[in-house]
Length: 317
Image (cartoon, rainbow, N blue to C red; front, side, top):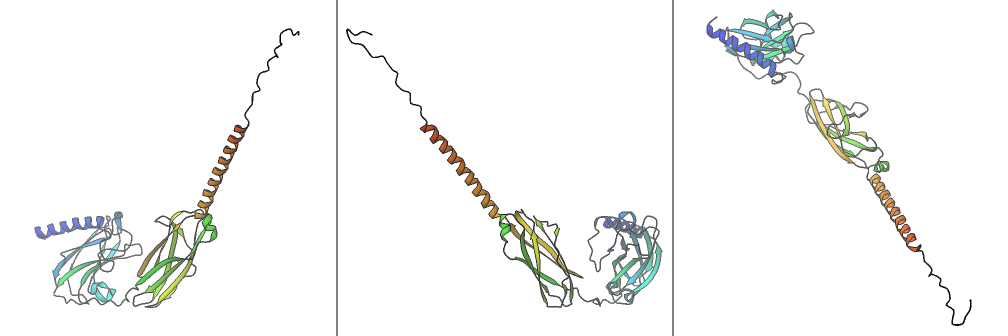
């Protein structure tokens, strides 16, 4: 191997290790070079780098892997059609053992795959406890390129609107439980049926954490169909402030979130407390006024002093 080739491999190893550590979620789930499964060796997400990333037919390609299960086996495949149809798009290059540090290195020859490009190298772990499958793009000069043939149906598309219906019960005005009805209008704007699943929670503030019983599953909604769901919700007694009902309507391959809020205040209880304060203040004022009036009417009158009668001249005692 030339010095230049050795430097390319070393740089690829460094970039591969750094990318596996800091970018575990950067790639697409359908065509990215990541595995949608737990990490392999050393807590590092499984990853594969190719050197070079562009090659002519018949040229050598080296695959470098890190983060795989130590002392396991992996299968390296060269695929066209982005490996969407599995073995129909791929040819198996070879199997390779993973080292004790979770890494491997394998060199193979770029040959035309069974299907046109976009071409990828797919690395699959053997065994049920492996990290799954990693797909890495590879450009091969001399191989035809065609649009991806994806036989899988497109995922459904959901749209949902939410509102709270119903008035407050009388008890809620005085601190009792507040009851409303959550009305969800769900539309399937996609081209395939959607098997719906519903999760709802409520509570004060922006992060509701009390799960709501939604009853039976909503069922399946046809393309272009509309489903209206009515779900009773109950806010706890003595609640006040902003309360939120939030959740998600989901189907395989699609989801739609919703959130609706309501201001919960026991205004009747506030009015009763206010009236009680006014009554207590009025009674206190009346008692004070009565006490002052009584103390003003009970004034002590002091009689004038008695003087002896004066005797005239010649009078005798």
